[in-house]
Length: 71
Image 1 (cartoon, rainbow, N blue to C red):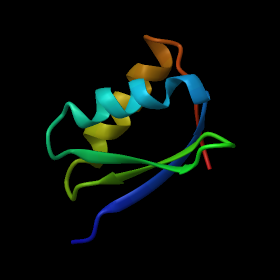
Image 2: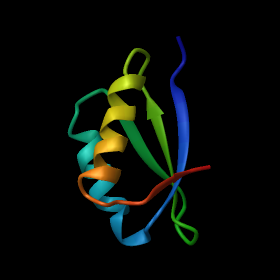
Image 3: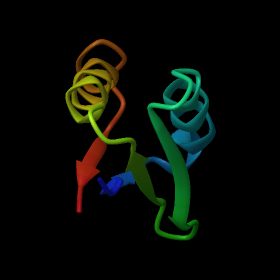
Image 4: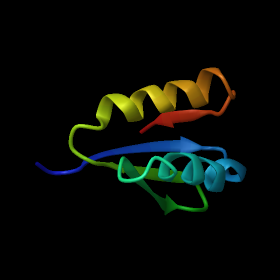
């Protein structure tokens, strides 16, 4: 299986925090900054972890008010 890639437009000041939270779930996903100027990040999600990442993204949006707009 290949990794699943999802891209998001985020607030530039939140990139490090999002990376820290996502990557704290060891092996679930890796966050890369695709375009620092436009604040575009990409999540490379391990096979079988997509639902966990979706739930984490939902939680970041709802519980913490972080804007993660899919591209």
